[in-house]
Image 1 (cartoon, rainbow, N blue to C red):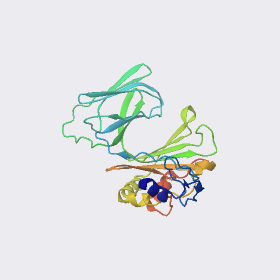
Image 2 (image 1 turned 90 degrees about the vertical axis):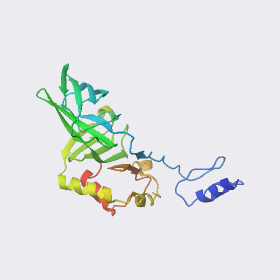
Image 3 (image 1 turned 120 degrees about the horizontal axis):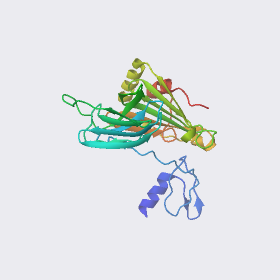
Image 4 (image 1 turned 90 degrees about the horizontal axis):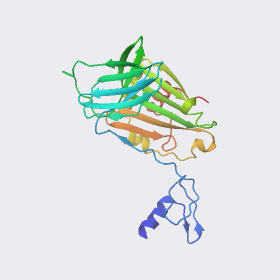
Length: 270
């Protein structure tokens, strides 16, 4: 009973003995059996801690679909299946991983392979999230090792079936990948960001106090409730991924981190 009363005080809006009490909070969960007149809070974005082992995915940068992709590192082999042109696969965990591995790719019925000589002198990857960017050109397979720096996911807007969605990913080599729309109707574009800008953004991410950012919760109505857009940021750090949305924490454009990110990803398509 004491716990329930304390929760009522913290929430600020419940019906007690048939009387409605006005809340000061913009949204809050209700204790069992109480009637709340505040907007329902959006679900919190799950935290993404550092994984136990390196996680690797494949990005098909070719103009061809890759009908089958497999990656072998030491004695472990993982199959990524079909990866359409421009798409990325799901992540697969490797007990030990390096910047390269044995790749077997099936394209237009032709088997292409990339076989490393050995890993002598190589330093294994730390647990984290990594991307192998594969490209098939003139019958040859090339690999570029990429690490994401930041992703910004725009959702909502005055479109149906995710037509206004936009996913922006910036990699450490300066590749900026933008996917507009959702599903089969999505369109992907790739451009390059100057390396000094990328380096400055990496330094800004590492210097940011994310606990301070989270200490300022969002206190309004999420824009997606009236055909606006919500932005979800994912920052890839050595310690793990920092992820939160503009409907969870206050979006203050004066924060240097936001200024640096928005300068790179620009604004969502209307």
